Image (cartoon, rainbow, N blue to C red; front, side):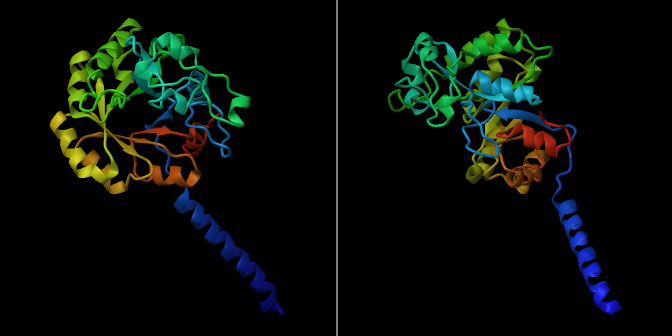
Length: 297
């Protein structure tokens, strides 16, 4: 009789032990130095977990990420036909808005008149329009302290003739530099992100001392690391879907700061955190901050 009574208690104790052990092994270790940025503001349209109706690189998405407690934001930059730097993720306007043609084929006035388009149900809630880089900086300057900003340069313009897709990159970099100087943005708060070695040199000449990050595809990591060393960049940028702890460790051993972009679910975020990045451009700011013991509004 006593044995039968002890059996359920033993099973309960075993269950609790296994559960606690699992929690101990899966709970991420908080990194107080981790810099958390909103990826394209608040990420991309998602139906659940979380529901996000804010377009990528839109002001409403950027504002929401900062209100949730992000240290900064990553934004996508392109240049209009009349050489105004604009925030926009997709190359062709019809892929994410009511506009048509490439960003490089439209004037800034035409671009800001377009409305973002995400389809149902997102467009029932969002009524956003694209904004210029100057508009973003002017709004961020009103904050008590300027947040970190990662500037993802979309410089491969497929609407230009073959062999000339990067012809406007030097002007794009100069225009970004002028805007940063105009709004007195601290260079320590800025990271240029490019996939091109020559752009690293352009950015360094335009803004001496600015941080420059080289985005490396995971399947080209060894080659990309060599380029990063040759160009003496400060940071390498890796995709959350493919980054490995080994790649991050190699980059750290070579003296680079590691930025990882992406990650939304708890599983994805735990996997990213296991790579021990220095900065994360995340699609779910609230969840990552909660996992780091920083609340998340």
